Length: 469
Image (cartoon, rainbow, N blue to C red; front, side, top):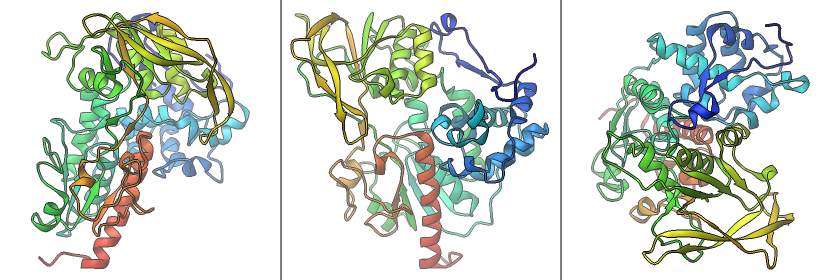
């Protein structure tokens, strides 16, 4: 089919009616021919603004050039120089707000599909068993990484490449952090994608210890003083859910999105062969408008529920990716905009039976730059649901700061760190959601990469190029 150079090559997806009934991946990816055609749309412009738009500074024109030439292995090697999670980022990174938004091709027409091409190169390398990891000679220094989410994985990978002996300590029974507990299989397949990229990390020599709750099992101070680690990176994320504080939140059938998604994604509650069931609900209201809200709503739909997104602003202000909102709509999710819950109502047995909401209107912009929602007097109404999922964001768990002497946090319990990740405690670095609060996978990766450089600088300045222990 003839296509204008201003049009992006479309990508195949499961039919909405079919995918709404399964947990298979929605997006099917480019074929080799489609990837080459899309890559050739890149004009290899002089200033490469896309690189500046990438939080991990991937040489985007270079890997795309290799794809355009049919040099898929070379493209994968370019990606491996900059990122430990190309197949993940190609799926969940908001490229439309980062590298693609500044793509010169997008000035007249569609931006180059940078994310979809990144995914293609990573998937091709995995399917063809391409070995990507290269490390320098071991330098004798030990670094502990707390948390195996995107920040921890990135920091560990960067340090391993530089010759450090890196051990990741993960609280859960499987590594991957939010990648395995927070993002559904239909967006990010765990076994096929996440486990493979963690396997690549282990091939670099990174050791992963699961079921280790730092602050309980062992403390930061013990890792530094007793276990011989020269530096520590805290990448434990933001797993503490936020609730509204309205009446009825303690009723049976009220979930945080974290719990609902963890029970389904990590504990496989959606599978009949796993003994981890969850009361999915017949009528589900998801409160919030971010990507996590979309994930929770689309999960509930696949579990057989009639599902609503309840959001206090308009569609224009939704913080979720446009692609995820589109997928939710086409799958049958209903949206209640300019609506905010004021109470969750229960039956005589203590289970959710309905939510009472009020209509909103938009006033002046607030500190986020979005127009502030204002309640409309006398607009309250009820609608029947049996499950409510709160997807209002998360904050860091205070366990690590509360058990670590000299580690400063701000009023939201986020660890305070500078641009290189250095905290108030010598030798302890931090990055990702534990510092910023809940954000995107790629921003956490960027923080992990910067912290790895900071750790490398710190150790070399304090101990020299090689350990003499």
